[in-house]
Image (cartoon, rainbow, N blue to C red; front, side, top):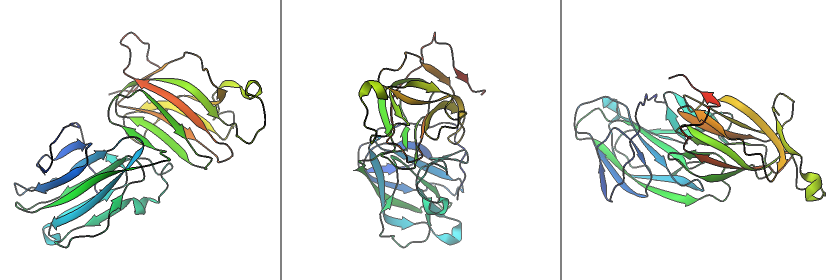
Length: 285
């Protein structure tokens, strides 16, 4: 497994077919990409692919000329890796860690389609010899049950659901953000035959410390796998209070933890922080 240290992520808009020359960038379009090394350089580079929240990423390599004996290597990662940290983290991903990486080198074309489990995937590569390279197709496939979602840009409203499964789902943004809960239904199963009024519990805070199995964490950190929590909430509230959490960190995360006992859902608005807002969490640079 590669480890890449990234200090800047650049967003670009391209017209296909595209000859790829940058070492690091974020790619958000379907199409055919080609990379050819222009220098004898052992640097590890990465193409960070992000689709829409309700899509997954499929990658097919149609050309590979990355000799193993020169130290060349290509790796497909089911998720993103930044500064040695993974999204989704090991606890939140449906696959075992070893199953999230596919590595290859040589000159033989691999026929399988490599697929991500969420809307984010990464191609890491080291092509040390000038003139060597590879090409691949990127396509985005509809995902009817999105769980872990990576947002590379400021967005508006998203809903996280566990679909009744014992899984953890997260909404992660690579920026500081203001987080507002618009609707909350966590810890109350649909099988309970009660009226809407009876089912409305309001927002319960610090649910993890109360020992409740299902809850929503709101927080942030300086990396993809770091999460300093502001609060953990649960309950059923169709009209939550107007409290806004302002997360002044490099990464903002809303994480839904589910035991599988309930059909959980939380609707979240994530927007650019108000300059006059009092931060709920500040991460040290």
